Image (cartoon, rainbow, N blue to C red; front, side):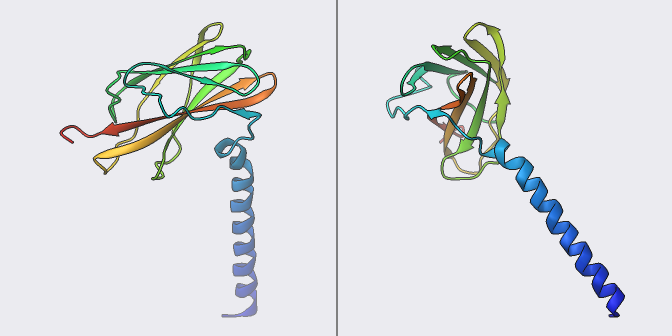
Amino acid sequence: MDKGRLVLWILAAVLGLALVGALVYKAWPLLYPELAGVAPLDPTCDLRAGPCWARLPGAGEIRFGIEPRSLPAAQPLRLEVRTAGLGAAEISVDFSGVDMNMGFNRIQLQQTEPGRFEGGGTLPVCVRSRMLWEAKVLVRTPEGLVAAPFRFETASPGS
């Protein structure tokens, strides 16, 4: 390989790495937002029984519910979030596998009345018969972004 081609390959590699670095830099806040507060996980929460509440340290509460309560994968889900004491401007729900990466699954909810947000989405299908999920409710408030985690399990039919 002559010297000119080698320089071009090196230049292409450097530009490619710079592009990847820029994409990671831009995507980082979306994937890993800086949080002003996080509610503790309530191990007694059972979203199959009904909505659950999370209390943020200091002030504010978040109520999260999913319908249908059977929590099926790859079928439409209705999500509802109610807030108290937060001044919520926008809300999204980030679904992630607790012990398996299931990709980016964030659903933006729409405000239907003050303190109430609704939306729809689906959970991806998993190859496991049972899957432990975490739904992280992300609430944009005047003080910053706060989060409340809610855990639940899905099971494939017949398991």
